[in-house]
Image (cartoon, rainbow, N blue to C red; front, side, top):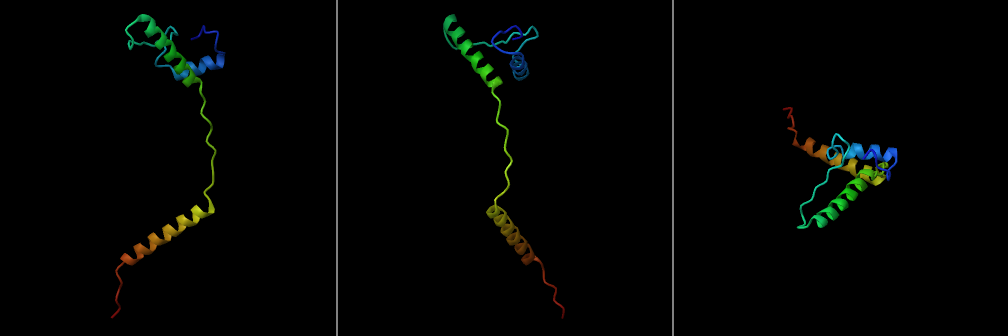
Length: 98
């Protein structure tokens, strides 16, 4: 991976971090396939797998944008809390003062 000319330094570092369990101490990315009966077919599958792995490693997720709850959802939540509180109040035993 370190000697690859297709990736810049930042991309190489990202791939090294994401694929650390598949990269050996000598810096080689190990991918294996025995799905096809021919060596040529397996080589093609390995190349495809390597491309997919590198694409996934270089893909950056979008940062989540924080949103506020809507007025309607806040009102619904408060109504639910009030309903629950009244249910609990109804379970109480009344003290009779006779």
